[in-house]
Amino acid sequence: MSKSWLKYELAIILILAFTGASAQIKSTYAGGLHFSTMTLKGAELESVPGRPLGFHFGYLFDITLFRGFTFQPGVLFSAKGTKYRIDSTDYTISPIYLEVPANAAFTFGGRRIKVILLAGPYIAFGVGGTIWESRQSVQELKFGKGAGSDIRFIDVGLNFGIGVRANKFMVTAYYEMGMTDVSGNNYGITQMKNQVLGISFSTAFISRK
Image (cartoon, rainbow, N blue to C red; front, side, top):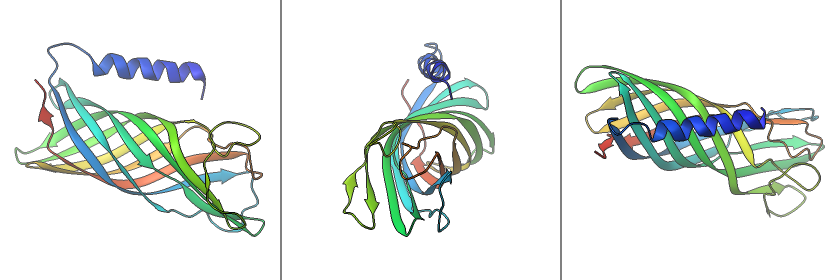
């Protein structure tokens, strides 16, 4: 994924997030649980990468573009990771990201119960986490690329989800597919990509206008 592509995505997110004074802007807190893993290539794995339970929480916006269609950017803290074994050594990687989703949402249904279909890109920045090796103690995750790095700082991918809104409560099931290689090129791994399957809960969007 090129750096120029990342710049264009950030520009689109900022422009749409602050579009016209006439736009109806709503917001809400959101949080939930998910199972995450990393697809691994180039490593001689002795087991299928695990899917540890993680969590996410943050703030979402809902910007009405036209009837039935909204733009939903947000800011979320998300704990991801995976477990695997190479050369009889167990590894557990648990990065924490500050994630910025930018989803387009289509809403349909009755007055009390609505169905929401959403999709869009996300960009995430590593803000912390740990790595554990069976032969060593738990260590702080090192973000970067190349020698001495565990995982890369930036992750970019796509979101897909479906939600149900009933009165003042909303639940959303979603799948998150990482598109960038986040491997720090340690441990004989040449490529790592995040994958997340989760469920998120929120109250009804609250108008800010």
